Amino acid sequence: MTDLLGIRRPIIQGGLAYLARAELAAAVSNAGGLGQITATTLPDAAALAREIAAVRQLTREPFGVNFALGHRPIDDLLHTALDLKVPVISVTGGNPAPYVDRILASGARLMVLVAGVRAAKKAEALGASVIIAVGVEGGGHLGRDDVGTLVLTRRLVDAVEVPVVASGGIGDGRQLLAALGLGAAGVEMGTRFVATRECAAHPRYKEALIRHDIHETTIIERSLGRPGRTLPSPHVAKIQALESSGANLEELLPLIQGNVNYRAAVEGALEEGFVWAGQVTGLIHDIPTVQELLDRLESEAIHSMNTLVTLFRAHGEVTEQ
Ligand SMILES: Cc1cc2nc3c(=O)[nH]c(=O)nc-3n(C[C@H](O)[C@H](O)[C@H](O)COP(=O)(O)O)c2cc1C
Image 1 (cartoon, helix red, strand yellow):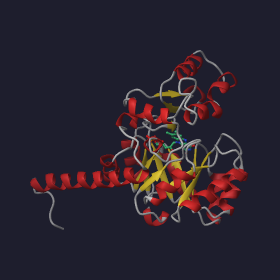
Image 2: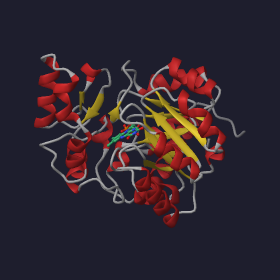
Image 3: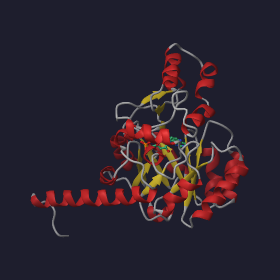
């Protein structure tokens, strides 16, 4: 997977609505992972072109552009990304089929986010280079089947031939090692990258990720068939009450639309809006630079692996080969 994508560390920064901007993407790629810009929350194709140029000012390493389907037409945005020869495209939240030929013809690698076996097999058949398995612990939009990362990743590793990346609930090196142990080729992280210095998230959002524990996230938009995991807030409670009372999309839209998320995530109005976050919020205790975070993940994974080797060796189950 690292060879396919041209990166040094098996760590991908997931798409982050309004937050996955050039500074974060470049920092992740410079630290050896794959950084990504989220295209679908930028105002237009010209803004995406500026963002891609900004990443290229900051890094010479490969990076990706992420498309969340189902929110708006993406043709203009995709055309711009492919025209500018972006090396990696990731797609989530819908059927990638209408876009695949164009993406592959441009020479870009395609990563498809899935939450189940059928979608994984379909993405592989379409030509995806990497499948990202998104478990129910994750932040932001999830699959509908509520399967956890530990089980989903293991299942998908056997279901497809292409590399599988584990996503959802991952934030440290022990979890990276666990994912590799499952047969994953690497990890994708979203929430953990929000709490880094280079992320455009408001400081109040980053501090809230430190404050909240693993059991405190909650899910909105389940009644719309597109569940997404957030931090709790009075506004989130209002959305959930409306959903319970049978409100339709039209009634919910003013409370769930992008600008409400933007005001909370970027401007810090947490109580009057919603911010996406996964259960890994309970494992976040600081706001490091991206470089510090990735260095730490690697050293934690190696330390953990050495501990395991010592343990197995003590039981005579590891030989020098
Ligand atoms: C703040 C936030 C915004 C997100 N926005 C997007 C998005 O625009 N596109 C996308 O593909 N995934 C999005 N996701 C999902 C992440 O890319 C990733 O799959 C998920 O965060 C993994 O789970 P984790 O948060 O436990 O690491 C978002 C997640 C978060 C936390």
